[in-house]
Image (cartoon, rainbow, N blue to C red; front, side, top):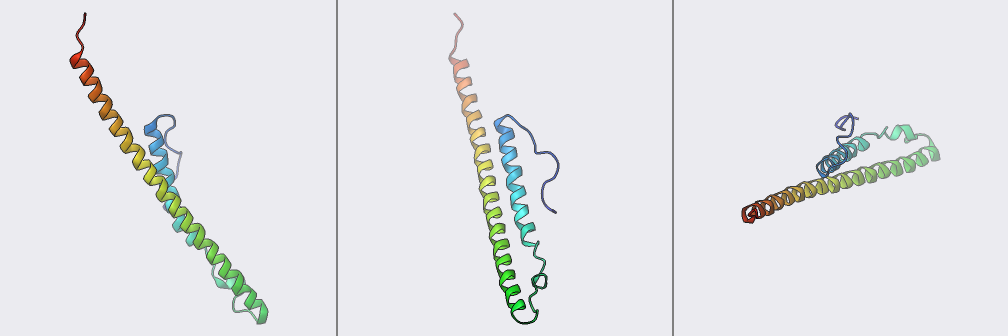
Length: 115
């Protein structure tokens, strides 16, 4: 599938790596959404245009197939967006936590006097 990240899933363990993994999966799902939409083999594969009721049944099947593809594509896109949002929120939270921790550490060090 073009546009889908390949290779090993990055990192395991730390919150930084979790944010990276969430971003990776979000990107993969978002890319997959476009790929799913391109899986359509065309109406002819379902017998649309065939004689009589066979062509009618083919049309009904094709419409269901197309609707299912569109729904799966939309779901993948929505889930990808949610994961990308979560990755961004997690990364921002990590940065804020580290800044607060550094401020607290600096305050403690500045006020600490050995006895």
